[in-house]
Length: 558
Ligand code: AMP
Image (spheres, protein in one colour):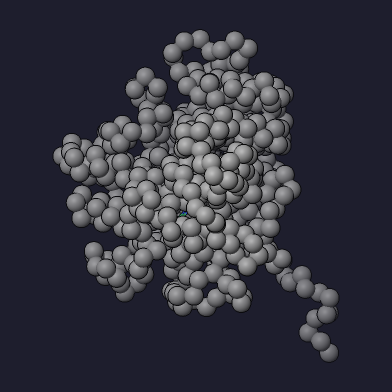
């Protein structure tokens, strides 16, 4: 007698409410009721403050849904934003997915060609654009087919002709509940593009479920520990991986939100933090370097007595930044690793049990590492001969999986980024130590990350090689004291002519955003190659690593 039929692997059904969909509407409902009085403060374009509560935000988010429905937007339609961090953008974070549509947050720093590509691929039906970002949209709007442009007014004058003022859209909508509008949580909620390694940006399509689970995880004590006692100021833009999911996490856990609008200067941010009693703030290292310099110059000007965590990610935190905040200002930097494809919370660098929490060097190894995987995120690293041991010294490409990790790219081209057994290949080279701490050693992806934004080496190389005097071009990431990395072009001449830097820059200028242009051009006799004939960029990076003054030491150096 067998205990069960061989083909019966269904198990005994659980008797829980597993069919209740985990949607952004859960978050909105909780924010509007349990945390209805918690504040949302925005720095307005005129330098003033807009204040309301989650209750007020939720009502306007619902009205936005109603207004969009009146425009003919239906479940699954894409609604794009070209916007900074402010309360209207927050309303779109809930109002768009809350009605079943998909919020496509567009990065205004991208070049026009990339913007055209992503708006076209996403088939955006509505574009909600900040009046201050109007020139970015005006440059491409005739080359894409977006039915309606909505302008978030900034008080500087009438909105451009042929557009709908945001306030009018919200006023037109009714305040009907969104509770049951989204029927299942695998439905798409948000779309964000990231740089493809071989050229065009790639879309990551977040489901409701992934956003909710990610927001839940942000409250973990060994994660970001968001709570109802926090006031969160995301400096990371809301067009970058949903501002690291902080708007959803803050609303779910009742943290107040402070949104800096268009003013990302150190003085503007520090003033806002002091005045709102910010407890947690988040951004890329470049931001924190500028703020540290301002604090060093004026240590008594700002009241940061409530600030307990400065979350830093998107690039490795320099040791001098982490230690400078701690040693000179008593402020804690919390380092985390993540990607657009991981929503982005991947790993967080808290010290483990048994390690002195003080300023000792042992603790700093952990604080400067990329941290341990967040709950529900699994990691492994693959070297040339298979998965590497967790010994802290054998490096391999990091692979991850988990319920908020992308399974595919939007648009169908998976770019070789997923393993046959369903893990996402990050393109980051790490070691993993016996306690599960990741330390980033290198990147396999051929990109430059400057101040938190990607620059495509391949695109620059192709453009440079179109110059008749250039036989070969390799663009590499070189350490830079302010931007962490900047592009340097290494060139081989076709003949005797070596065109001056200005001529090469002039060739690139019409095709790329100005911040993409290489900081230096270097001529060599030959570019070293791998056995398969590819440029050996690691050797070039080593050769030219001091070209731009170097970078601050990061956790890569133990
Ligand atoms: P993005 O998709 O633009 O957020 O970029 C993700 C990539 O940024 C990662 O794959 C890493 O290469 C890099 N990155 C993110 N966080 C860190 C970190 N804490 N340390 C080093 N690199 C990081």
